[in-house]
Image (tube, rainbow, N blue to C red; front, top):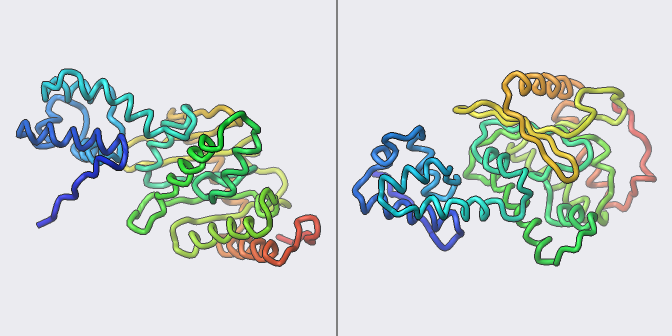
Length: 292
């Protein structure tokens, strides 16, 4: 017999909300399936809301309030949960933040900075500080912690998503941190690769013209939902769900992947760059490698 995992409502707003939802549902003597009667949502979806893994959509919150006779409680509080889950992230990133937790495959192209899912704390902090915004240190801490929490996708007890990224080779030599911290950042990526949690390819700086030259890209594929494409600039992000357009972006990504180095050679480059930083070899002193 499988023991049901208890929900710790003290962990955060999402968990408190989910625990209250489970309490009210069970008090009413309803199973997950019975509570969902008349809605368009599945049992797994509602179970993940109860455990704090998903946010509650407004229409489902309204349905739950009607069924449980909770006087609009879950509708009123679902906005609090949404804000809590987004804390430390831009509003335009909210849809991707929720989607990447449930994706089967995530593919990402990073031409200018390392992807957020791969960043160490010092790397993320350096990017936020570079904006010179009038934020208090604790506000930057909140943003850094929120970014690091996304990487929980790579914890040992998670089997998905499969994460496949392509990095511009210049990112390995772009020293935005002290050498030892840059080495630690690259070691972190190499460790994820060696654990089999991610698959990384390097796009050589000598490759010339290539697909997706105009910006970064993230493609998210799901087992039970249409795929998504996401791209962003400095202060704005855009999510695309039109199947035809997403398919065109997928083709561009595939062309880019074909131009990148194989995973084994890419890992070697990452580890060599980390070792150079540890040995005090500055990017300006590096000889241009023949990557053909």
